[in-house]
Amino acid sequence: MQIKKNIAVSETGFVFNPTTGDSYSLNQVGQEILGHLGENRSPAEITSLMTSTYDIDPPSFEKYFFDFISMLRQFELLDEENEN
Amino acid sequence: MKTKITVALTGLNNTDNPGPGVPVIRGIRDSKEFDPRIIGLAYENLEPAIYMDGIVDKTYQVPYPSEGSDVLLQRILDIHEKDPIDVLIPNFDAELYAFMRSEKILEKAGIKTFLPTLEQFEERHKSNLPEFGERYGLSVPFSKPIMRIDEIETLKDDFEYPLMVKGKFYDAFLAYNEEQVRMNYNKISAKWGLPVIIQEFIKGTEVNVVALGDGEGNTIGAVPMRKHYITDKGKAWSGVTLDDPKLLDLTNKIIKAMKWRGGMELELVKSNKNELFIIEINPRIPAWVYLAVGAGQNLPEALVKLALGEEVKPYTSYEVGTMFVRYSYDLITNLKEFEKLSTLGEL
Image (cartoon, rainbow over all chains, first blue to last red; front, side):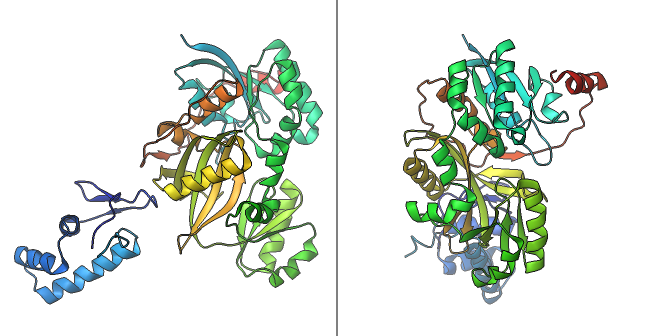
């Protein structure tokens, strides 16, 4: 699960999709998750990293995480073609 | 050293329904090769560019093409006699026919243009779009020109509501029922004449491409844009350049197939299934062309070079993510200026 290569994410969390022209703002947690996705980490790894950093249990985190992922998919930000 | 050149152009109406004159002038003025003198050709005496600083050097009033192509042509030739014009850039769809027809006369007088041919102009006409799509294997929404108001009640046989009601040159309205089609038919036909075009509504995202063809099938430049904000007149108030190879491939395909000559604007809708539909092909540079200049492709300058018969190297890149935002501005001028243009026909 990776973000498309041409998607630009700035240090301030501004996301620009140059194919559609859409732009979005991410909060700190969203930026961290996108960072982990960029490093090609699996959902299990991301869950483990995030639950060790923040005060949240894995089932609750996964609920929000997969909700976030479906939002990225809906906005066509995920690189579905090159997924294994 | 820069080459001195006099360019005359129309489209000075930088209003809420802007013409391309001002951005085209800005592009030409940005040129590192030309030292331009700009002659503005105004149809109305309140077109803002007439009064804007640093835009036009001289303005002449010209008659509307509806008063007759010959009257307009004669006025241009009269202006040329006392204030010689090197290149003429018409910026309105509605006047193009008159200038295309007069291209040889203008050329003989020493005025250069770089316009589409009459065949190209007709082929991409809104009312001919279905045949155009079929001929070149392009996706276009189903459309039908209508000439009589009583044809509206039969539209339900061919279309599903909502549908688009369009003027042959400008204006487009979404209509959800027969009554709205009738209302828009009357509004459009009174303004732009007949036929009125009925077009299938494609749900999706509107994207546009400004491009320049050299008349030999080559694309000199092309920049795609997505409108960020659209005014109630359907005009872009803000937009951003895109990185979408599919849009550029489609543009190149059209320019190559048609051997398009001159500026063009492709209006497309990307459907929810990511399919591109051609909604319109406008036969001139659009009012947002300065975005292309800002992104690295000075298409107005390239157009002038093509008109002069110079060799122009195609642009191969542009800055993705370049944005424009329009603004309105209260320009203060003296009534004397307005009076001069109104009474003498020049300023």
